[in-house]
Length: 132
Image (tube, rainbow, N blue to C red; front, side, top):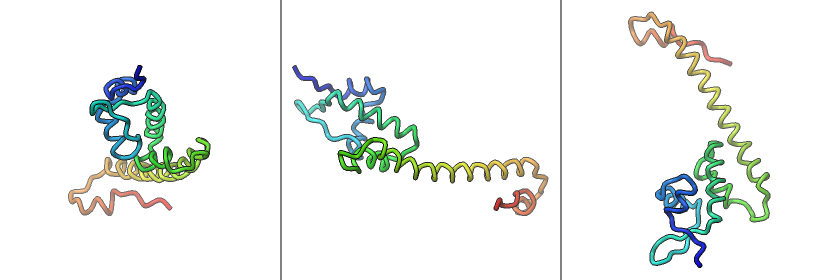
């Protein structure tokens, strides 16, 4: 009996659309499955990979970073080492985004108090001074 499952069943079990699986194949997150009569047949093991992809997406990793996580290391590299390197870099990026969001928040608060008649004056009078 064939243990491999059709794309629609894997998609259902993973909670994604079949088009997502085809996209993951195209971008190199999933290896192309074998085909039976032209139809993709996936090993149930692919569900573990899809859970890792979901976790990585929740952590904000890009497709390229997820591909690196899955395939950019020697096979013997422990998962913890893979995550550590990527997480370190992603945390820097997240902190930069947080800093930018705080600057945006200060600016928007300043603009809520705007009493200018000309937009050009807002730049001078409503924008808070840049943080050091």
